[in-house]
Length: 443
Ligand code: GDP
Image 1 (cartoon, rainbow, N blue to C red):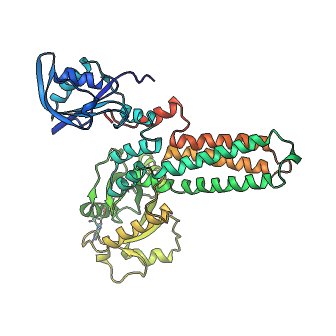
Image 2: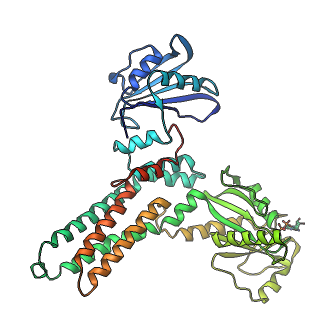
Image 3: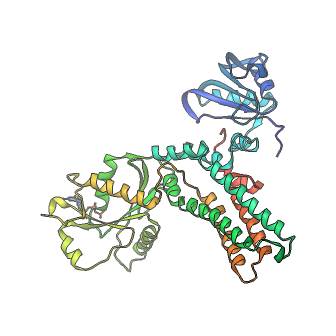
């Protein structure tokens, strides 16, 4: 891609607001700013700002502040100016037009961050953390993204990449020698080194679940017979928790989804349709969807009316691994069952315990002792799985009778390439598209 072009975009959200920012980056950023402000702008002004009118030809469009950054000390690593004008739906667009007329072109999605990556300001895990931070649904999600933006993954994966490369180089080098020229424990040593690296890859893979939960929300499904109190419980939880505005497809005909912040965890709470078996075609479809939701769920709250609790217990129904039994309408029943969650949507009793139990489950699911360690995303997971499989194949080759070094060298190279793609040491245009298409224009 050509980096000789100067790019520009409105970096603030569209709509009514006090201030808007038009960001310009590239070799002509200063020249563009000079044209729009009518003042000379150069690298000696880096780190400063000045007040100015914003103009297109002789027409004054707005007035505001110009911030000057000189590459490589800028977000993108290039010369950058930011024009801060008034917000709203008209003025920012006019300033952007003036900037384009002065020689910049419109930036593509994520192009500023992509340039930051190509200029070595960020690695891919940090670039992905930028968009995760912007999209963070809860404080916990934001904290996690920030730790990755500050390089929590960069170091780990760069080191893994270097070690894997060294391993493949050593094995490749060994191919130049005959077997009896190599030290007798050569293969055993290589295997030990490979095991160590593969182990780190595996523990990183273990963080994928929490990553998914923090990014997309934990899927918590309310299941139970009709009238057991699913929608009432959902409403009661919604009333007491901050709802998260979500772009996830919301209401479907037969299940209702809401996003909640439960003690910092983003939770997608879904009320399923009745789960009874039926001949009715439309309802059968609803049942099928409910079953799919339950299959995908992180947690299933199996609701049973407190008045039916004993009958349920005696029926010997076994709960699945991700199911939690919740007795509902406890205001209607006398007594309870030990060690069982019990709520009343009417009085609000038991809701705190239920929330705590949900959070407890989520912590367990995330299977991560160290709360500060960051987690991987789906793209990183795919690459690490490729690496792990390559390590497995290399190990199988090395432990075979033949102790096949050719296969091992090849597989270690595959593993290195996959680990390198996590941080962007190795990348293709497709990979960059995959990462940066998630971004908004202006970031
Ligand atoms: P769903 O079909 O599982 O979604 O059940 P609903 O939430 O629609 O509740 C069915 C009926 O039970 C409604 O008449 C609710 O008012 C009532 N109900 C739900 N939760 C409670 C509760 O905690 N206490 C009492 N007394 N009634 C409840």
